[in-house]
Image (cartoon, helix red, strand yellow):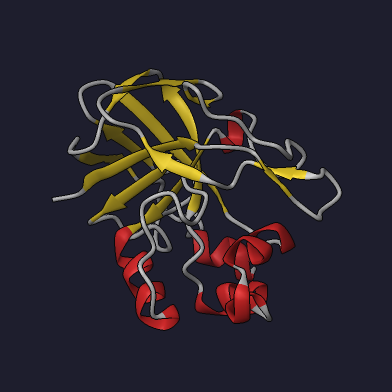
Length: 181
């Protein structure tokens, strides 16, 4: 069964060497239900709105199965939110999800897959230490990118909610196909 493991919002803004000067990548799980709105989770922010946020990138979702891969690769625990994701899920093939695919999370929320994440230098700085060197290429080459989602129907979600695939557009490219395309 596909399941929402955690809904994550910004814990704190962090000074960053990038052009914006700050990053909101430090996401942490919310206890209990959280409101999902057209522009994302209640109490979440994006520091660089040129590359994150907006209706087409309201939520960033990452699979636990992909996080497990990186935990083995990096030899360290990677808690929900570590990838800067808003939603940590299990049982959903994010890389194989098709653009336009719609999922229901919990009782009411409906989201639509829009695009893959493109790793950036801010993400590499967040990874830090010896793993940061070449991180963008390494993350990109692994094709475990996660995906951005549009909010179709707002509502509340919380960890433990079921995720149901409602529709998959025939012939639409997968997240991986869009990224490598």
